[in-house]
Image 1 (cartoon, helix red, strand yellow):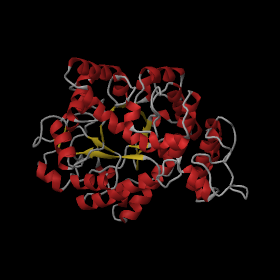
Image 2: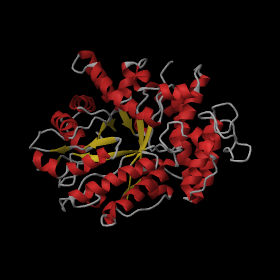
Image 3: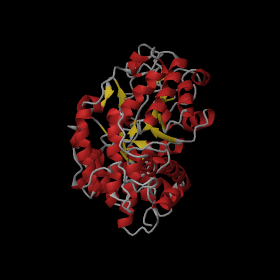
Image 4: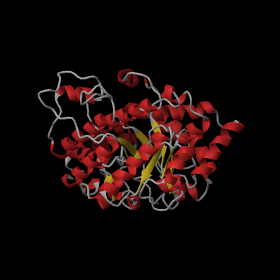
Length: 462
């Protein structure tokens, strides 16, 4: 990773807007600094964000520290005891809001941003858009997006989605990835959009977009480490998170919380942490802590458990013949431990469990509300698996699948076959009364609460 540090530092200067390097810790640095004012110049601006990113890069690369204690205290603006890209994002968001007329001290801004504040002035369309994470191609109407173009800028104004998910085809080089994401963040800010999630599947092993293209740390499949203990699971996850965050990704669709309990299962297989339910729970709990300490949001997947199916839900229906009681005593263990460790999201798979419902889990209220929220008591963000996968797309139009998923209790809809159709379907459902705006608000509040935890979304039109 060290060979990418110079590129990241150069990019940090670009987004700093003022072209200066990180603050240095010298004898003239005061013992205390105002929150966010890393270089002590009395301003909260891009130079402070650059300082935070540069320090984070140095620490991530070799453990070296250049900040004084006062600078670290001033830099930890979200008070999570880490100085990382999330703090830089908060500073940049405040700086951008100042340029549009925000008149508020930084400490008050940081303490006063709540999901309710952000939602107050959002239209129904904006709230519904917040419930989608989509491929950049689906948003901008392009093929194999590798740069933030004018089409992306215009699309973010029309459809201010909750986030983007990137794949190997979107990545060429470290600098290209950083510029693509950094420019997209700038476009979103200019459009007045709530800061987006920038997500990727980086599990390690066969599913590792950054390792495949950008040369980040290469791991064996997580199953290879099953006998190496929780410390290794934690370290691997933290390394994965640290690596991808250098390019601007802040959401990883990992760890896999499925247990490889059916050896005819090829879609999960060695992506699982173990073939033993209790061991999977132990390792997944450690991995969640690793992702968090590495500076990214993480996602447990694929509830209620994809490790026992024989089919691949990418292409067709996948069925688990486990009973509800068997799931509770086995598959759910890893999800429960991941929730206890602070997992940010849980992904619902397109898995049909006949003992509970005939619908795929992602569209089933009995599974989403009844099992995940009811039996497991989870009240965080629930995201569907990609809705363009065969298990759903072969049977339901985008508009129908979107409404069914929200009725089931899902908060974020991942990669529908058609974003415009899915968003229109939800808007029409609210207007017709089949869905209430209060139901939309429930999901949007969960999403924004998670974002204000680290991304610090500013109030819209305030």
